[in-house]
Length: 110
Length: 241
Image (cartoon, rainbow over all chains, first blue to last red; front, top):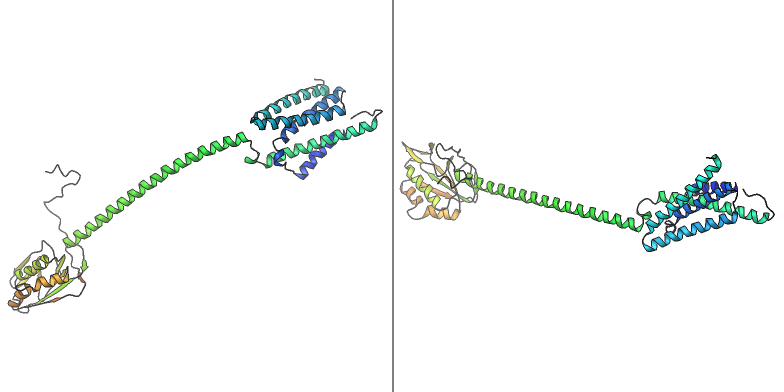
């Protein structure tokens, strides 16, 4: 509950501050956000499964973000940044869809 | 979200950490969206995209440059055509001027002499005036006028009783003959011993020659259309022979 409120607060603060990411962060931020979203949806699913754990969430959140950023960084260094970004986005998107499907089954029994 | 457990202090801290991470996620989400919207254009583009855009722009620039070259060539072509047309027009105008002076259809001015032959006794005949005209022509006169009559190649001098007709128009003394040409040459030609001035004097008349610097031949002769002669078409000059 507190986490949901904090998410809303973060969005509101972002809307008010209207920040622009620094240039060095710009390639990584979208992927990091998608990775974090994956972690959040995973946590939501775990919550509905009754197996949510703070520590697991924090570790998965941080590691997701770091791994996503690392993959993009590596891709940029190797010259396949666009392709790897797409790949990461696709994989995370599939995972998010899977988690959302599980959450949906919990909420609507369907 | 998390049920209270014996290690509550640690649990509360973890809950706040989760909340902070969620807040950061929300902030990053908005930031990313806003950045994406703010950096429209090349700043957000990746290197591959930039290379592709650059290739496209280079090709476009090449195409436009070729287009500009062809258009410039067209401009040059039209300009040279216009210059040629202007040159032809100027040439034609020069020809018209020369022919107009020659045919007597255009007024002329320039250096020359004005010969005044006073003949109070009407002793002179037309051949004397014709001699004067011929003498002036020999000396290089380019335009001639006798009284109000433009003297050209086709102008005839005839006698009608005591009156002299030039091209059918009666001229009366004093006869004023205006000639355009080198004034000194014309003057010398008229004054040579046994020349026009002597002849006129022997006939009992007097000729005076004035060199006012610039003289005008303003009398005009209307061009006559040829009844029989036709110009040969310049497009097929050989077929006539």
